[in-house]
Length: 287
Length: 240
Ligand SMILES: Nc1ncnc2c1ncn2[C@@H]1O[C@H](COP(=O)(O)OP(=O)(O)OP(=O)(O)O)[C@@H](O)[C@H]1O
Ligand SMILES: [Mg+2]
Image 1 (cartoon, rainbow over the protein chains, first blue to last red):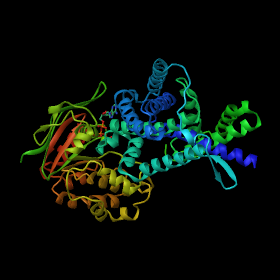
Image 2: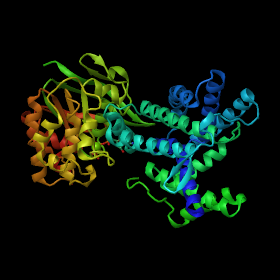
Image 3: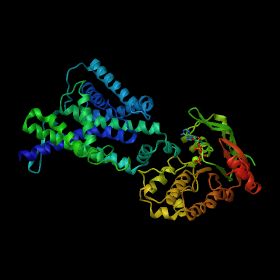
Image 4: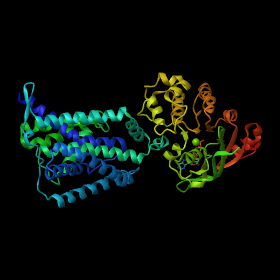
């Protein structure tokens, strides 16, 4: 039972990593932008949820519901007024600017919330578990994983079934010709980043309720997100989920052998996939 | 005839390189205008300038008495000018039907063109509607590009080299759609390397050379010698 149990824990943990990664994957898929501040934006959203739930006494799920539109607006504005100006043929400006934003966010959060590590309390849900066949799994990890499935299913429906999604794909294919269709790429990009920030808020809810976080927690979340995206193949959201799951399973298996090996095992799995399939498991056909 | 769309001394640049040197053309409502000229003459640059991809000054392009030279492509489209770009530029991630639908992303009010009427115009596209657009033959892809532009219900349709690289029968099929497009009252501007084809469909022809208009007039009024000289810049007998 214990190995199966470990794998199931890993799969569920993979849901969290997929949530970290989905926003990154969405933005990269549409505008080829790598946002180095992604992890810090997750932490920012976690603090926002913490603030709303502790200061106003709101249930964290409800706090996330309020934080999501705020984060959408922040993402929209960040993209429209800052990141759009960095996009072009040169890949360096967006990396430099988002790295700068990452530093600013970390220091801003440090200033506002101190270096103490925090946690969002979910009351009775914490540590609650439920039977899943013969297994006993934590309720929050299960909810996290189901949220990841829902988010990725929802994003795929949006991208492949709606007019906005068509505009996303068309803009990603050919920005000049998209303009000839009446699409304003700057707005499309702003909406995409806004959506990514909604996903970031969902990720932040589970990050903040699962473990302690502090203003410097962002970069390591960014790394997990990156690894999930790259394992899955750039631009494929289901691939990103698979990448998150592989990372999660590798980590829990590693930890089962030796608790110190958890992080290392994840990185090794990432490297192994890169060696065997450099373009990831499910690369986009068109590129 | 008063012009619906005009360029007035239109100049356009790629960085420091000047592609157009004061081009004047006029397009009346419902008229079909052909732009001819050798490779590199500036035909595509003219189309790109009108459609808002290539920047120019406001008053250099006038549409329904409004200066539109400085507008971006989405704003030009919103006013009713749609383009079938050189090389078709279909979206590879989109199916045939999605390529058509994206043409209606910003519709120019109500109009004759819908998925249904585009499929009537080019029936083969209905059969291939769920294929990736790039899986079609060149001629079929060109039909998608034209249908996509029509989906915005344009008042002016700009077509850049729609016959390029296509077999004569396919070109004939594509041009067979033009009378139906003209029936909607739309003005059409076609860029053509195939002079005979251009003279056949157009009511007005402009010849470009090195970014300038070297000849213009009604097709019947122009002699082969005039066209040859305007096209190549040398009298016919001197050309090799
Ligand atoms: N993106 C660009 N950057 C720099 N110069 C360009 C660019 N596009 C076109 N040109 C130059 O502008 C001039 C006009 O080109 P344009 O494409 O308008 O010609 P054209 O008449 O459409 O030719 P063709 O028949 O080959 O399509 C040419 O000298 C060309 O080299
Ligand atoms: Mg051209």
